[in-house]
Each structure stands twice: as C-alpha cells, then as structure tokens.
Figure (tube, rainbow, N blue to C red):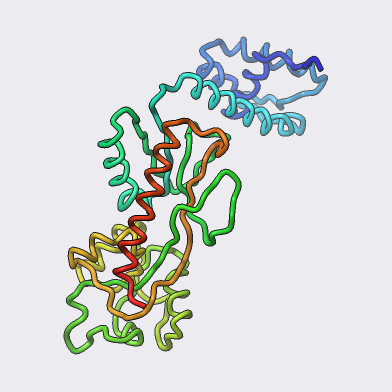
Length: 304
C-alpha cells in the first residue's frame, strides 16, 4: 500500500517548534529563518485543515490537534535518529548502558579484563540511574535491576542480589560488639536503598526483633554507604558479588552466621536478543562466565 505522508519538512518544523515552544528557537535548531518555520507550519495546518498552534506575541501554544500530533511525531523522529546512528556506527564496538550500582564495583573491572583479552572489541560504557530506553537511545545492550527474577523479553538474568549485613572488623570487638542480629539495635544502619527494602527484608526473613529498618542514615550512592561501613560508621547491607574484594581484604566483615537474602536481580537487556552482533555475543559470554565464577567464589564467603 502506498504511504500518503504529510510533507516531511513541515513535520520537522512543527515538531521542533512544538518541542521548543517557539518558532524562533526552532529556526535556530534547524538553521533556517523564522519565516521558513512559519510557512512550513502554515502549510501543514492547510494539509490537516486544522490549527496546530495558538499564536501569541512572543510564544506559541499547541492546540488540541497539535497535542495529538506531537507525541507520536517526536517518538518517530527519535527512532529515525537512533537508526541513523546505528548505520554510522563502527564495527568492533559495543555500546552498553548500566545502572551505577553495579558499574563501578563489578562491571568496569570486567570490561577492562575483557578488552585486555579482546582488544579488537571496544566496549563503550554509559552509566545512569535511568534504565536504557532502546526506542530513544543508541545502545546495543545494558544492565537493568529489578525486584524479582521473572522472565522478560529481550533479557536474560545475569545475577541475583544476595545481601547481608557488613561492617568494619572493629565493630566485632568491644562492649557493643556485633555477635547476634539483635545487637544491631545498638549500631547505626546505613542505607543505599531509599525505601530501606533490603534491611527490611533481611530483618524480617531472619525474624530479628527490636531493630528498626527505618533508623540510621541514608546515602545517595552504594559506594558512599560501603565506604562509611569500612570506616566503622555503621552497618550496611552489601551485595556479596559487589563487595567480594572488600571481604577478602578484610576491609569489611560479615558479623552474623546467617545466609544472605535475595533482594533483587540484575538482567542483561538487549535491543534484539535474536540478532546480536558477534562483538556483543562475545561480551555477553564473557559476562556470563564472570558471573558464574564470581558466584562460585562468593558462595565460599557466605555463611549458611
């Protein structure tokens, strides 16, 4: 079937003006004159036989018709931009996005080891708290964290968060030494999760009374929380895979003989899991192997 589309230049002029709220700013973005934007938009309004803007002295506002058109049009231009970037991308490159929680303590060392073995493949890492959005962002794959390990499309389970209380070895000594979970009532709880879900679940599953999971201090980043624990400031919840080196070096200790609690899960997510490039397949296989090896090592560190 033949596509009957509105004039594409006019659509581009409308989308820029609507997104920026100004014909002048749209003209600057598209490197044309304000008059050209105005003419393109007027032609589009003639095409639809409907006003798309209410024009003021120094600004424009979308009409109901304009508001119906803008979201789908912006999404379409975003997808075109992503597709264009992918056409230009260089071979031998993997563009990867991850939440910061796992990036610094686990993913970056894995990337360095991978590229030492495969210098022909360049992994370009971006970290952000917002999960990767393949419709709007030009990434091949990423890591997302979820509260459970349910199957998801174009995703595979990478590792499960196994959390346990950790502290500086100095807190295992003295008159208020941490010997049993109830002793946590005399120490400061450190939080990297805003809703304190990790502490709440661990205390509940271990039937610990007299310890308030809402008490203590909150930190913006996991690294800050763990560093405070290393300094003896309090007790943090640590993911065994992410604190493996701290435990081995004796910077952190696990004070209780209780098994870790599963809190959440990290998933590898792909733009299209059925059509991976050879470079991405190689990196995925490396991460799988690194996870399996790390799981085996930390099993020996975990009590219970």
